[in-house]
Image (cartoon, rainbow, N blue to C red; front, side, top):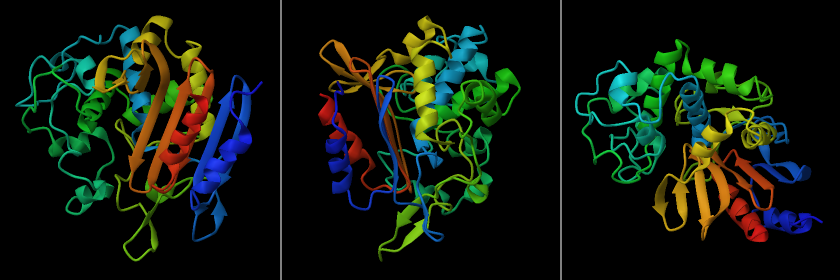
Length: 339
């Protein structure tokens, strides 16, 4: 018998009038709901479908973490390897004791290029810096390379996009491949994520949703000038709800990584607040001593998503939006049905 009621899920979505995106709910091997809402392209009135590709912002930090774990399995780096020993790039003021694990768990203490404690609008970054010039991890370096440490490595959690840019640089230097090429060759293609990729915002393939931002006058515009032109290690890949489901399945069946290393990704390494922890590129919500939820989340101008697995219930919920409206509210209300 189904743990959650389709009619209740539909009622939750109906309350969020104006939601634009896809909702995917799976219990065991049964898809409860897989449906598109709103428009992928407002100008052409093209609707969102279950197969639509969406930008997922920071949701793809998990891809970067998996790639690093693949290098660990190959013996190229370890989680305890110092940054200075696996990347030949100068960071004049960085602590010499920063490790790969510090970067994976947002506990390195390095300066971020987008500090959410100081800035609230990601778009502001690109007013004096052409967003079309940001095409790879090295292009971010001038934005944080010479900055000062904020705290001692391992001292605490502070969400940090620059840390994942550095992880992408480690992947590039130690594989000889572009970051995006490595992910597509070693994660997307082998595990059937054939609709996923790092696409230039001015050359989106057919079936992709444009991200939309509403201005002060209530008019919609695309997010093409509000994000780097192409995604990278800290965010910006395009994928589908079904592709994310394939990734979750491959992960939990230990197809991508060994059981031992998969458990490291999923382990609650560091506390953010209350019962919320961070693994490697993944959020972990605990209930007492038990894991209630694993999730990846993303939010950028014109992008919002949450993809979650509830291990004890064997339920998977993915909500992806091409605006910033309603996505997380829907995901959180569906979660209340699962508790």
